[in-house]
Image 1 (tube, rainbow, N blue to C red):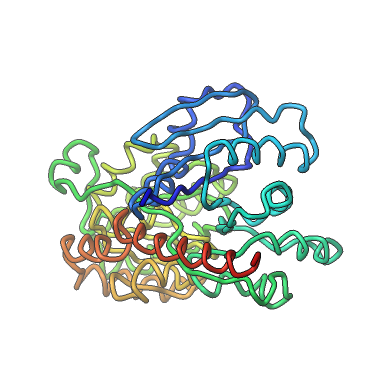
Image 2 (cartoon, rainbow, N blue to C red):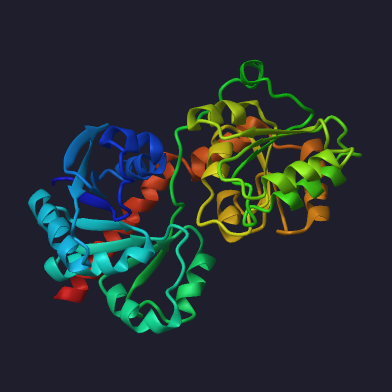
Amino acid sequence: MPALHVAQINFQLVPDGLAPGEIFEKWPSMVDIAEVALCSGARISVIQAAPYAEKITRNGIDYHFIDVSGKLAATHRGRSFASLLDSIKADILHVHGLRFVEDAFAIAQCLPELSIIIQDHADRPPPWWRRSQWRRWYTAASGIVFTAPELALPFTTIGMFAPRTQLFTVPESSTGFVMGSNAIARAETGLHGNPCVLWVGHLNAGKDPLVVLDGIAKAMPSLPGLQLWCAFGNAPLLAEVQTRIERDRWLAGRVHLLGCVPHARIEQLMQAADLFVSGSHRESCGYALLEALACGVAPVVTDIPSFRILTGEGSIGALWPRGDAGRLAEALVTTAKNPPTRQQVRAHFDAELSFTAVGRRWAGVYAQVIENHARRIR
């Protein structure tokens, strides 16, 4: 019996000037999510909206870049995508992003026998005046996937999905990061500290770096050897962060702003760290946390739905209430003084969050969605 053929589709258009080969570096999650699904035992094809047409085969996965230039209407784009899906004989369509439901519906109109599942990627419900139309579009999906059950509530409490639509929980992705050697990583990166604490995330209100700095400062009397290293991309709060560091005797000289770091370098930073800290108020998954767990770093992260899932309800590391610097300080001190071993953290990752573990989850989801859709169209 031939393997199930899953087509994953990204409707987010490739940025202008970005060549097909460059997209793998720019959007590493596109590759990771496809390779996670490959571990389900299915055959995987990826379809990517682009301003050009190209096909690249990488690690056994065909990446189809579809030229949607000039196709402003979802119905027009839908015909192009449906034509390819029909030609490659896909069994199920795995759509990335709940906000792209109009495009998914357009494809369903062309290929009504094709099973469709939509995966959440930090999406939000539409404004009230568009909800009736979106409810109709969501009927195209036989299944919707979230990292954590609570992330579905903004949609389900306003009745966005049909009663027959199945809801699933699967971690959004995985990562190929490895533990490596802590000593070698420290020597190569220059990171140090007792504990050595790492932050990876934007310096914006949603990540709450100022509260994290307050928590770090409160923990310093109990952890005088602590050093915090911050890798970040977008930084609208950079000036406030710098001022906060300069004016606090506990932070000055102990907080290091690394700025934007290449993704490959992040792995070394995590291998060098003892603790990973995050102040996020909301995440659809938490890629940086996934990567930290893969590297064996104990997490001290906010008590939000996706982080509860990734840490096994806080069984690995510590969870603290978002916005509460005092509780963050307590969590840092407790975890630093009695941390899980790197091997324990990695064992949790291997069992629950690795490509193999998440791939098994997807295998079950795909099978259920196909069965559910078959019942609908009989």
